[in-house]
Image 1 (cartoon, rainbow, N blue to C red):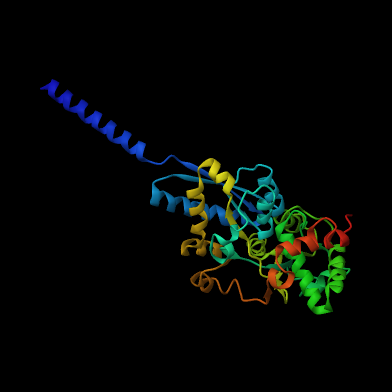
Image 2 (cartoon, rainbow, N blue to C red; image 1 turned 180 degrees about the vertical axis):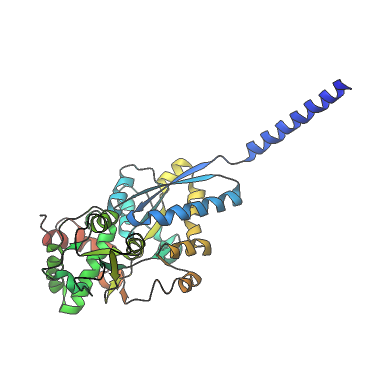
Length: 338
């Protein structure tokens, strides 16, 4: 009897071992992705990554871990070109992602056609963050060239956000004062009021809010809301009369995902950005979602604005980069490092 019980127990244990072994053999191996992004997206992607990992696990049974890397958008693009093993790039502007094609064919030339809305699942804009109570009475771009105002903005040589800032100020001046020469004079006066150029938007945010430098910080809209949440009694922000429609773009980094075997999960990671669940997370973190449902939900905190596009005003990023940010371009001509 004991022998029979022992035999049955042994057979049961063996069957369980075989079942577990088969299940383990069928379960996909865990995978890790690296999302190389720009400065202010840290908080957005922390929540988004958790939502995607849960979704992917439920769909495929595979555990996925997403690592994040953040910095000035131009510098992040250069890091990928220099060998940073990014599976996806979620940079501040399409021009930085274009550099991944130009410098090493990391992505195809038509990368922006692979996802909806030119591979931009969310948008943003540029606003002016001021000290609480707005003691300098800053209302619009032309207040930033007054001699009594110090301006904080990052370096457009390294920061995508800084390029949006620069071009927003340029277009405002071009329309108000008439022509590119007047705009150049205006932007030169603005940068004469900049005491320090940080490499990225988050660094400038720290300079303004924590180090208490400057009277106004030219900021991403979502970064302004984050500062308001953290330093609500110290900062306010105002919307200028004209600003730029910023369209951060996302892509799989083809060379890396093909080498690592992560293309399927990396592609799904970017496609999930367009789902209603992700669009709600995007609005929650003060980016402007694409879906009508999320837009309606967050309409009060993300009001309709007078915005222009990079294509309409500057002929696209290639042209803007050549004229304004290439070596010897307008920025180099007007900015004298202190």
